[in-house]
Length: 154
Image (cartoon, rainbow, N blue to C red):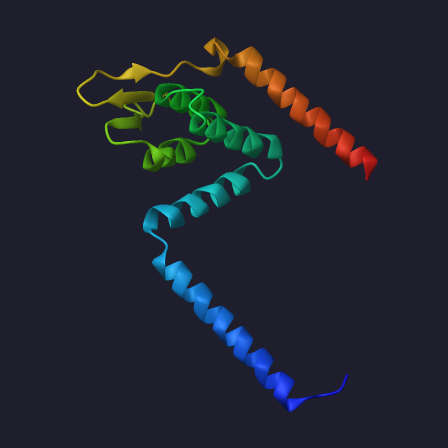
């Protein structure tokens, strides 16, 4: 490798500009965007050994964005998916529009409820009573089979 002072200086200049851009961009990101990335990292960390859970979460969000499901259905599905982690379930409140909130009124039962402005609490059914359980299980099974096929092909 031949050392060129001019090339070295250009690389330092480019690296410095890149770092400055990243710092500026990061500081300009609003707190909700930062929290979104932190939340996604938290989901990945919690379910690192079950990537299908993370993929299912992304599927739920895409389905909602395409307006195939409404807010109560998103709440229901996310709560079912993350039922084993109260922190993730309650952390999802950040993404809900004003007037919607997931709550746990009684820590002893661990039951989740949601409320809308001016309305009483609504119990979110357990996974055993999930009306979408068959659809959810089928999708999870398909994802697992696809992952197994990909691993076998490697």
